[in-house]
Length: 177
Picture 1 (tube, rainbow, N blue to C red):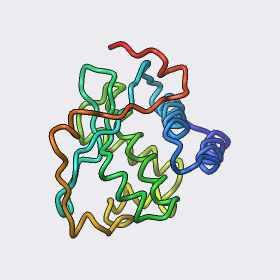
Picture 2 (cartoon, helix red, strand yellow):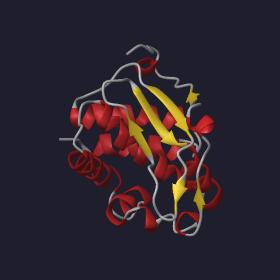
Picture 3 (cartoon, rainbow, N blue to C red):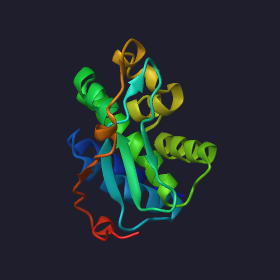
């Protein structure tokens, strides 16, 4: 069981982070998962890759099972960053990193991962915070913008060349599989 003091500490850390601080948000996710699930994964590589989107449908990110790699959809993040308030973008980034990191610590089943992501998010933030609203109502509650009307299909070259994020955290300094 997580104490109220620990929850408040996590919330204060979250509030202090810049909305584009991938490393800081990911460090918080690592600590949250370690506290809630008593699991962690060393040597994570975080990459951004162009995956595109198709009128309301897109893959936000994925963890390649059997590897230490997590990839986020660079095109979807770009649209969200451009068309959303900073606090909503940060909520989505936290949610996405939490979801994929839960996969990386060994929870392969998508339903179980969604359940754990939801319960952790609601325990930390409640249902009125953007992270809580995201897990309750889905992306449409926060991002009803270009994804509904537009499409973007990256070239094969764009999809084959991920941009890796430098993670300033000891858990991510090891980069082997």
